[in-house]
Length: 371
Ligand SMILES: *Cc1c(COP(=O)(O)O)cnc(C)c1O
Figure (cartoon, rainbow, N blue to C red):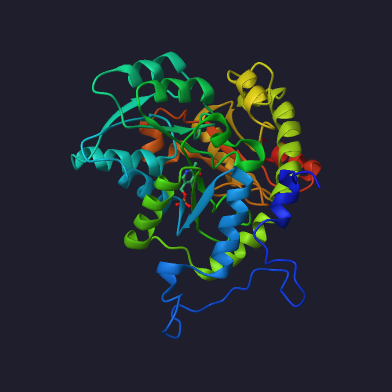
C-alpha cells in the first residue's frame, strides 16, 4: 500500500492497533493517578492514551513529533521559554496580538531582545536576521493576523539558518492541510488547536511540532515542569475534531474563495485581503508553497469604522465574535482592540473566518449586513 495521503491520515492516524477486541478510538482514560508499581505514574508526567493518539495524528499530518499544550499561548510560551535569556528574536510586528504582547513582556522583563519586522518584506527580515548580534530565533506567522501578510518561508528559513537562527512558524491559519512548515525547513511549528485542528470553538489547546528529537525532549520537559498540560476531555474533543479537518477545510476554503470574489466586486467593500485573489500581494507565494488559499480573509468596509461596526451589528447567520477556524462563520472588527489599533490595523477592517455553512446563506447574510 502506498503512503496514506493527508486526508486519510487525518482519519486514520493515532488509532489503537487493528487487533481483535481493540477499540477503534483511543480510550479517553480519564485518570490522573495510577496504582503504584510500574508506569504510568501521574498524568502530567506520562500523558494518556487519547493525548498520545492526538499527538500521533498531528505529528503524522505535520511530518514531525507533536506535543499538545493547554492553549496556543501555552505552546508559544514554552517555545519562547526555550530561547536563552538575553538572546535576539526576530518577529512580526503584525501578528497574533497575544504573541506580540508576550514578546513585549519578555522585552520589558529584560529576558529577550526583539527585532520587530514586516514578515512579508523578505529583504527587511533578512536584514534583521543578518544584523549583529546574531538572532537565536525567527518567529514567523503566515498569513499574519489580521492583515494577511504572506511570508516567503523557504527564503526566510535559508536566511535564518545561514546566521544560525532557528525558525518557528505559527501555522494556525493554515492547519497541516494547507502548509507543512517542516517540509520547508522550519524547526518548529506552532498551532492554536483551538482553531482549525479542534474546529468547533469548544476547546482551548495548543500544539508544537518538531522533527528534532533534542528539541522535542527539551519542550516535553518544559511542558511537564511549566504545567501547560492539556485536559484529557479536551484531547478527546480535539482528536474527534481533527478527524474531519480535511473535509472542513475543503468546504470552508471553497466558501471563502467564492465570498472573496463577490466582496471584491462589491462597491460597499473598499478592499479584500485574501491570498486567493490573483492580484493579492503574496498570491504567488501561497500558490507555490501552500495547498490552498485558506478560509481566512479580512475586508475593509467602505464608510469607515462606523460602517464596519454596523456590519458586525447586522449579521444574523455569521456570528460577531473573536476567534477563528470553527465550523461556524465569525466576523470581527479588530481595531476595537487597543493592541491591534496600535499595530496599525485599519479601523474599517473586518476579519472574517469563513465556516462550512452553505455559501449562498452566507452571502445573503453578508449582503443584508452590508446594508
Ligand atoms: C488564537 C491564536 C493563538 C493563541 O491560541 P490560544 O489557543 O487562544 O491560546 C495564537 N496564534 C494565532 C494565529 C491564533 O489565532
